[in-house]
Length: 100
Image (cartoon, rainbow, N blue to C red; front, side):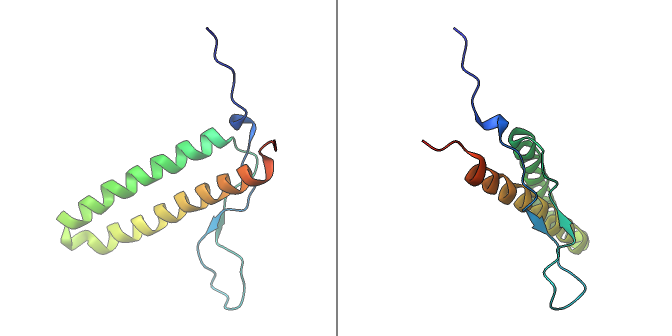
């Protein structure tokens, strides 16, 4: 029995997800932004990989107190990247999903 191909893989990133502040006060331009056009599946896979790394780094930061500032900085950036990917996928689902 063949499974039907779901519609979700046709949905792509929109370029809305972003993270990283700016060095210019009063501007809203982020340092990093998700590139539009990547598949939903790929973007979610990458967000999952980033969050797995965040989880491992958090555990390591609890054990390696001397290295905690460096590890937590990495956690901040990786979790920001994962958030941006997830935000972008959500936006793609909202605007590209077929309406019933």
